[in-house]
Image (cartoon, rainbow, N blue to C red; front, side):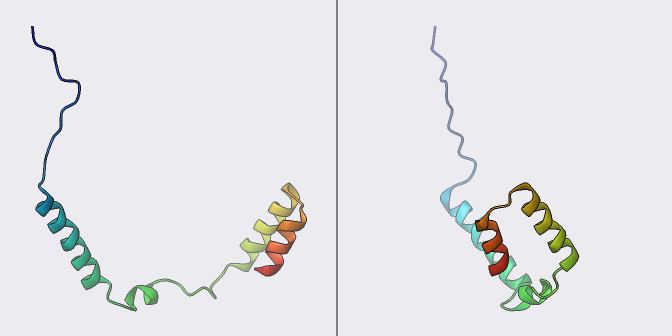
Length: 76
């Protein structure tokens, strides 16, 4: 009676296939998002919801009122 192997290696793709997939993905990403276009699509950091930020800070200070958190909020 033969012993069954516990682990089986499956090679679905060769190394060249993996490199081709990675390079194709990178090429598509560069074509879709050339330099600067992705930054235009993202909202600028000035568009911050101040009411939500203040409510978040108040909850943090209620749950953990420490000097380090006060300093972190002041610096931000």
